Image 1 (cartoon, rainbow, N blue to C red):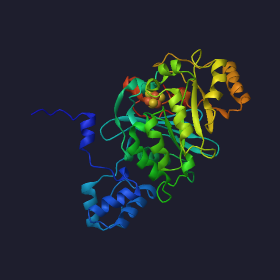
Image 2: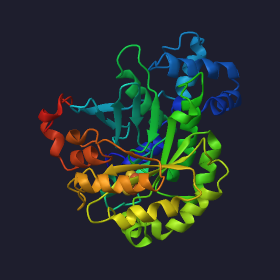
Image 3: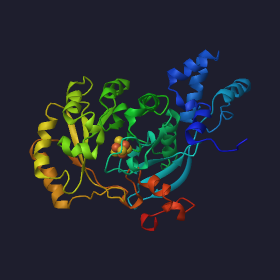
Image 4: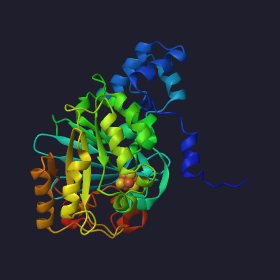
Length: 375
Ligand code: SF4
């Protein structure tokens, strides 16, 4: 008989579910279905998210027989840290491996009064946006809820003592709305006051515009929605974000305008990656406010973080200034997002892509310290 290893997706299908794959309500139901008291699920949630234990054996307020029954049906998940890169600005990029060897990225961004984690929801991404390193990786599979939450736990372990993770953004590898069931469960655990305890307004989920899933996502909790817009015409967006051919700008904006969960206290964050001579003209800056009319919103302008897998570059600083000034003048709430971690391949998919091509193997120990010595 062949001794071939199972493929990534087959190995994944064979695993036991993680206890972290479930929100509190779902875990209570799973426990009840097996005849275990529902309050035991609450105790397990405490161990997972408050005490951060990595084994069922360590859950010592559960009877030993119950612990072994739980261990037969579930595991506790966990991701292996393969590589950590720390930028001169403090941004940490983690390359993480799942049990089946699939690699994903998470980026921890320290700022003066907050710590933000950018996490992944898929291994690769099926949407092939033209400017994105993750799109160039192709798509392998969806992450489980447990794998999404393990990124949060891993990031939390890296914070200075006494500090907490304040913000989570679903903007890493993958399109979250193509993995909505797992993303929704992860959000429930993130905002569960007795689990990870984030305020819903501190959670942001980004989409390229999977219209049918926007309404259901916004029903999960009062989180924020970010939309990767990146263009003001369908001709340009069709190239940058091919999903636009299915859900064009007009339909996307109409969906947002009509969604009852989008209002002044819960505006949409439009992401607009500025690329030289592609979407940075003064005509674009003048068209954008008209497109956004009637949608409570903020625009994040992000000069392109260049990488080898895309032919795009950031505009010159004066062009960036002209673009943002035109938006300001038109009454648009706009922020220019500072470039974080450019020296460590911090844009989504860049590090995994580099590792996939073997370029990171020069540093098998992982930690690379300050970025100027990163490569
Ligand atoms: S930008 Fe986002 S949606 Fe587009 S290919 Fe990259 S990860 Fe996927």
